[in-house]
Length: 249
Image (cartoon, rainbow, N blue to C red; front, side):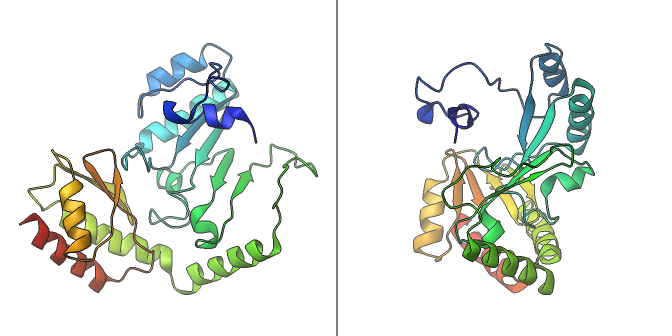
């Protein structure tokens, strides 16, 4: 509910002058020395990082960086916050993307996949924080229908082995996409995949949509984002590759 939440978003277009108060420092991804230098100033409350950058173009923090970041935050008494809103709930082939690095964090933000499209968000907190009634103020907090939806999602994820499916089908897609000479770089984990091209992807996305009936996401001008349902089958993945081949050729 605070302007600081807006200030912590690296998008000048949505930060009004009243929000630009210099509370946040943005640092390069995977640059642990830059983080240590900032923490050494002694005025850092928390470090926020995405499990995998979504809008940023499917950029992955390395396991080594996350492990060093965890230790650096511990050493400086800074809270490590993982934004897993897009990369969580099985999307990366593990329940949370940061689990690929084998670390434990202090706070995790979740939404999107938590209720499979029904509006809901949540914050997971470490035992080091004492929960107090009224700590979170919200008009619709604790909505019973949303909670039922979230529980149903958990049941389906478990019963249909969707995390394992995301890992298997995602690994296949990543391997196959890396064989396309037209794609500059393929990045991702599980079913959170980015395809970076040398030039604008506008025409490719338009042709995929209008000619092949394939809907894709985008980041910037040169990156196509693939965020399919976690129930995507191997046959459907192969069908996508066939249709992508048709467009790229």
